[in-house]
Length: 108
Length: 111
Image 1 (cartoon, each protein chain N blue to C red):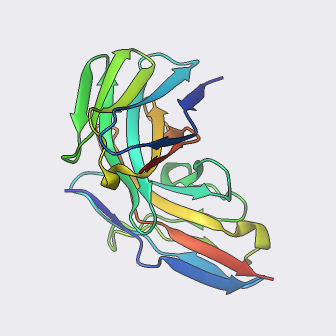
Image 2 (image 1 turned 30 degrees about the vertical axis):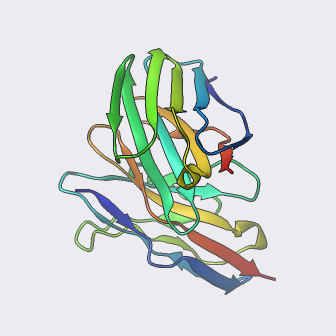
């Protein structure tokens, strides 16, 4: 069965510090991984996906199949990065499974 | 462009009353449709998934049901609400190899 694990419920970093949000997954097939973000009073929206290999708002995430991880990283955190972040896995039949989320607070 | 509408935004219902939450998608055809429940500390729990009209898959046993009477309409229902049905419900859609797009959500409080 598929499973997405985000071990940190809360994460606080100072502005300008590096940030890493952890995500591990379990899936028997070839996974497609995503990071979603939810800012205060806004709807859940896509941040980035592993197949695009892009950097969005300074965030990057690399799929490590050996470690079954898809950690989200940013070298210098900004106050506007404070939000709820969800890691998600898409199965071969287009079902999306989400982790429990990590609430990131960037301290000025 | 595609849009997703979900209503109502908030709802307060007494225990034992029925429920109907509606979700519609515009600008796309034959989307995959999803209902999720979002709870603090529990993330997003997939409740129902639909690949077409009348085709519903339930992920977890519960007091809720879903229907898809039209291609771009997805309804979440209950005949008799329980206190434990309180929560934040999200509708989402996707097509092909794209990501899932979410509605604004409905905050349901059962009293």
